[in-house]
Image (cartoon, rainbow, N blue to C red; front, side, top):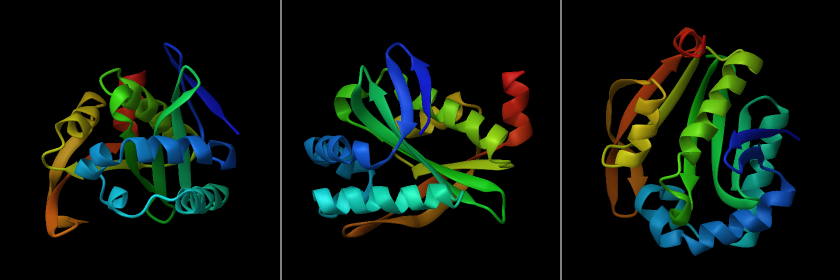
Length: 182
């Protein structure tokens, strides 16, 4: 297990079985908020489904195909961030979400920054990707703050109940990130 100090009482830890209950509780307490931004939140969020997905991500981590993390603030689960790794392309797609009460504190920006350090330094990733709904200003701001380049818009790329939404795609190359960190 790993733990990365994000400062101000925040940390990022590996999402494992010990985090399942707290993740389930946070998701269900924030379902209406999450449903605005996350297509997966429209499905039933039972303890079994959340734990099963956590186990799936942990298995992907063992294979080097994901880095699933939980963001905690003062010991309380605040959200999650995960990198899905394409080993062939040496790229990673990063996703994240927070409980509404934890927004506006810079938690996601700090967590994704730490995740980028891990991906570029320990996983030999050449490119990181963030895609988000065009109207998700907070998520887009995270990518822009971290130096990602807006690469385009994929029309109708995300399925929501009764509609399809456009996704904005951001990319960041390893050398760009390492240059910013030097």
